[in-house]
Amino acid sequence: MPTNSSVPPMQQPQSRVDSIDWPSILPFLKIFGAVSTGLRPTRIALTFVLLLTAVAAGRVWDGVAPPSSSPEGLLAGPIREKQLSDAQEAVRSVVIPVLLQEQRANAQTASLDELEVLLADAIRVNTTNPIEPSRYSSLMRMIDAARPRPSFESLNEAVRTSFYALIASVARADLPMAIGAGKALFVGVPVASWASAPCFTVFFIVVCILTFGWGSGVLCRMSAGDMSMRGWSFNQASDFIRPRISTLIFAPMFAVILGFVLWIPAWLIGLLGNIPFLDIVGGALFGIALISAALSAIVIVVLLIGLPLIAPAVACDGCDAVESIQRTGAYIFARPLHLLWYGFISLVVIALGTLVADFAATIMWSFAIGAYESASGVSALSAVGNLRFLEPYQSAPPALFSFTQSITASLIDMWRMILCLLIGSCALSIGFSCATRTYLLVRLRSDGQDVCDLWEDQAGSKA
Image 1 (tube, helix red, strand yellow):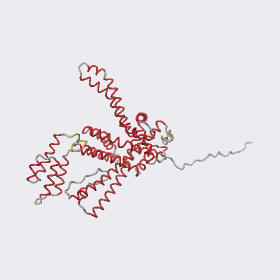
Image 2: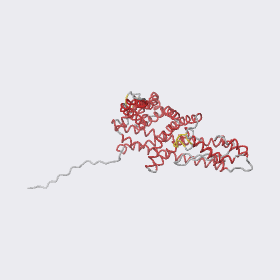
Image 3: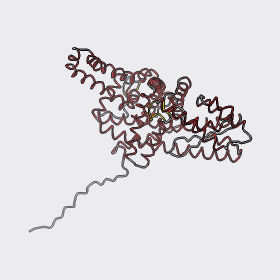
Image 4: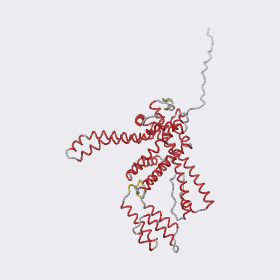
């Protein structure tokens, strides 16, 4: 006789999701942490000192070397003597009628600097028919626009303009504008600098390598400590990097020298084309020239693309110069899409941090200038330019002042320069942090090495 027996269903264990560790699922989110770590006061101060050293070296060069860029700026190309002389003649034709009668003979052959002095003297002496300040400012701007630019000044202006254009394009999500600004910053500016002033370009590259060699390693070591939850201090990071300073300096130089050495066979084979009968040998050996040039191009491309990863390789894994370049090249060819994606995220993160720093600096400047002007009312402030959000520094129109007013304007302008350097320091500090996080994430994808696996000198091995 059938029986109705019911078996109670098996009770399945229930699980509950309290939270999701998004950085573990989407590792690129860890790069966004570079904003908070890069904007820490210690790292901003260190980057500020490094940047100030590079700027001081550039100013010294401008003080001893003649101008090398056209009046339109670095990207306009080298100085063209015919265009420069025509511009100066046009300036003289406008300024000379304003001068006193006894000054006009000397002004016919005066340089732009001498013409500026003559114009200032004419305004001070001519009290019967004085020139309006706006007219004086327009004439001074015309003189300045015809003057060739010093090497570092033109480079600095081109870098600032291209960088702000890149940040603005990222903030507006304007991809074509971002590509154009990035091309101008990373390709156009270096090429133009080399074309207009090769000696200065070599000098400034060496200065940057020597200046940022130690500092970049310290910043990357501290960033690696943040990502691995170790939290290394400045002294701990500096102690780790100190014996590796030579590696950080010679690694990029080694890549440049290697690329040049690999390029020499192609150049020597090209020389055979100038010698009768040996040009046939040069044509037969052209295949060797192709191979030599290809190897040289690979080394240079690895250096240009992987340069931000060399310092993290030294700071995270204690690599020497050759090993750091080998690791960088291996990661570029093994994970190119990952590097491209992480590079894009890093650009967004740097733009975000720069927006914060630039906004804070703009607010500080506006409030300080407003309070100072309302309290003192001195006219010296009219000789100081203005800081605007997401715009390069805008210089003030030239004006005539007394000795003390000129000193006051110069001192206020010095503080303006400090604010601009602090904005750049924030961007560089965040950039080094992004580079470190990118290196560790690419290393994780390529070698399966955990981001917390960092070299420790005390243990003699990876911890």
